[in-house]
Length: 256
Image 1 (cartoon, rainbow, N blue to C red):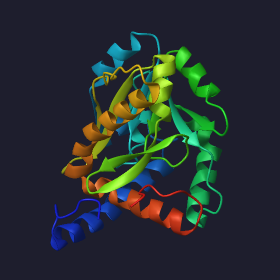
Image 2: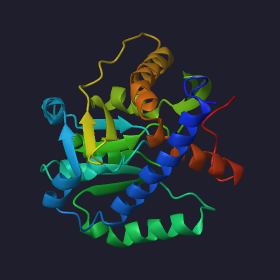
Image 3: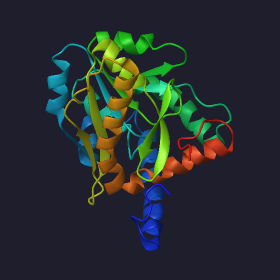
Image 4: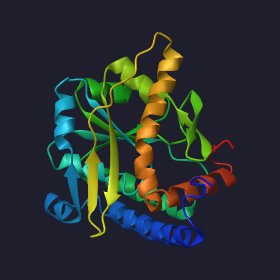
């Protein structure tokens, strides 16, 4: 439904099967985040565009590394931590009603949090911890397709209409923190490529709501290349979101 007629039935079947491989590979990585060292990280992943981030940090406003729940999206935290860069995960409060396995993963993550080489900012009602981190010129890794946020607006995504929050764009405008698009892509050799793009130049407008919409759409349009070229990196995310909606514990991504 998302990609329309871009893929035939055989390709869709391959994408679906491959998505399970990516999903369980990511779960395995997540279980060992407190034990992975720099040497092991360099065996399973590489980082591209680090200079883009270092240039952005020269503004002393921190940085927002924004991505989708796409592939091994949490790897950026290890990638930057092993480079000596202070980086934080921007996480929402756990959803009520999540399944047994998800709850156990969250419990394990909370238990091992002290062993992580990066910070975790769990946001419940205030963005103050994030603002403070940016003022200290720290990096925030965050996803843009999460269902927690305010001021959701419709944006066309391939053949569907999705709701995205303008919150991260608004945060960038208010704090001056640059936005750098990010993607983690798994290569044919199974090694992960952590890709940091150059700072996104914001579109200016006297109408604040229009400026939020234009820049959110600009970000989404740019990210579509990853979603199109690596649909198996996103398929399980779409499935998980649909299941959360079915269980009544989260709001839908798509409105059509």
